[in-house]
Image 1 (cartoon, rainbow over the protein chains, first blue to last red):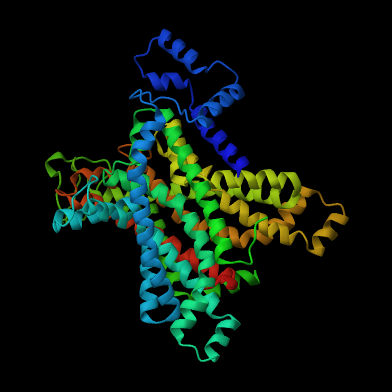
Image 2: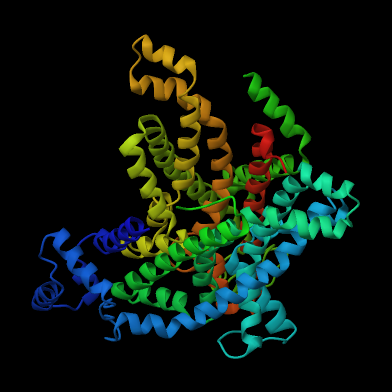
Length: 295
Length: 279
């Protein structure tokens, strides 16, 4: 895990240096004098060799110093931490919503394979996967806020504010998960031990819930962890559509303000969160399937 | 050739795959014949005709500066297909090359390349693409570069896995024994064996590329005005949702149908090429 985190820091650091031309010119804008540029280059240590710059940046990041925003002069970490709860609230609600929808739909589809309900839910899932998040968000605003007047258009506040963004963000994940749960369940139901359980005369519900589900869920758990990057990506877009004051919206605003330290900080924190989620999935994996052991 | 026929036969029986192929063919035709189909030029502005709802003159209405949404969407299909093909082309080229090298040479090369894959997938694609596109500057070319250099990991992993099994075959050993070079073995004898999963991934990849590219355009980093990119038309309609719902609604439907087309065909191809994966 450590080499991957180190690699991630190299990628994040390099993005800053991808910019064609002088990064200080972008940071300072058109009206900067030569002296401004020289001073900023000196302050940021941009004339040192790249590996030295990287190590200096890394040693600061490890101590929690992500630099200061060019735009607001605030410490980057403080800005991100202020926004993190909003993003966490949105992504977790979306995640839970997607599980609540996907697992029953996927299981039901597998159990009632080839029924009309199965075909309908899988067609719905394909639509869910194919729908652009930003468009879905706008259409939900159009329908539920403008036409029906049920929910606020944007912003963060009570549950009414949360519902549309959470559904929007959760939809594609739910669709993906429902498809996966279905195929994983189908795979499991075909196993010999399920036939044995049935032939013992167990009630179908017990066979499905106690015997099949636990094994069918193993691959699903991995996908849940892999869903997290997708959710964070979707959060950037969803937050923009619904003016949700989270990290994603801060990232977009910072991009247009050329506030690179903030962008850099957000990308790094999101990547580290994703790595931690994968670790969590590995741990859950061993819990669900005792045959798997990591030494 | 036999495998190709078998796949085609299998595909013909898959209604969703046929529907997907039909949608894609239709969009390609629309893109080719755009100037003949579109009633107006995509950049033509008629200010007195601002915010007109769908009508016979403007089938999908007009935007805030009196441009025909239908015509812009027709021309937009060209951009959508071009952007998708270029992104998938970059992704597949990088991914397949690295996957072949990784699987064929193994050892430390494999370890390094697979760690690189682990590092890249730690980033949400759209977040990393946003950061790269932001540093390179707004514009469709930069969006294509950003998405192209990120989305190759899936190809690399799958191709590597295939190469690992193909290279154990006796005939590879035999070819090596008669003195064939590594390059020849890789491109003449291993690559043809891993083409099937690449085709499936590329088809499904078109859907992903279109979705990501239109998202970046929606966020303002992709196509710049007056380019008729679907994501950008939609973004422009965002501010007028209450007043002129049609501006944001129709481009979204176009994006969704196109993506559905590629997903249907991709799923069908996967089932046809690899029956083990059939669900």
